[in-house]
Length: 132
Length: 142
Image (cartoon, rainbow over all chains, first blue to last red; front, top):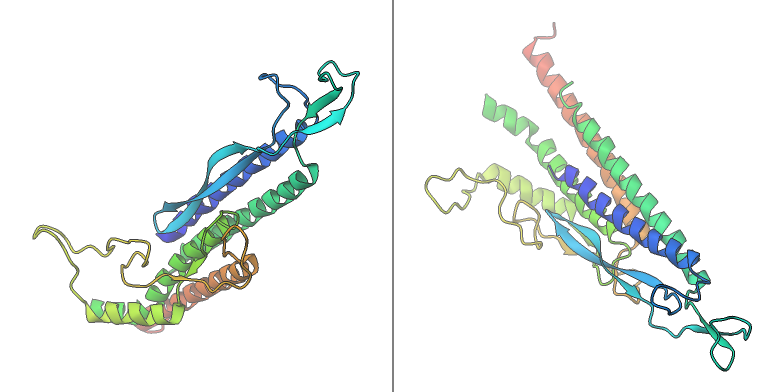
């Protein structure tokens, strides 16, 4: 019964989008973290989606979480203990506008997949009424 | 008599089976709306239904690898066809391309998804009516 597989497909997309939302939350929370366990400023993280075959349909999963390689923001702040000899502090390369857009896109995609799942559920319940 | 009943219900049964498989394809498209290089797929419903009906009425023999095998209705699917092994799955024409190579157009997919769900429910309503008609005939209108 392929309608049951809609649950798997939509569920995989929901979990992938939730993971994307998670990285967005982490990026926004650390938008000003000048240092971390490695001693370097926080680098923005992004998820990479990958299509995976699921029975007849195609689900989605997060292949990897990559770190943004773009240069860190240099902020002039000589009073900061992390400042280099020229007085510059390396700040995270998180682009807050990008992250907000990412957040909206992830939450809309999540909603769409919830609706997909609900539609499949309605159809299955209707199927159960055959012959009644 | 049983054969006649099969014949009577075949059209709606075949259509419902294709509709549910199409629903899964559309759900896959929606799920992969943000996946780079994913190409949206769909079936041509009317030709798929004609093909499925022709196969259902022809009683074509199914390939088996051993004499002890029961004929298997689910032929091996390779992603180019649906589970029946014969209905071709096509790629959707690109309306607005994306830089990441994704061809899912959310508006198209959403409308097709809703349309397909509604037609599935209509199919069930018709199937129910056919069963009711048959019951009325069996019970002689009592």
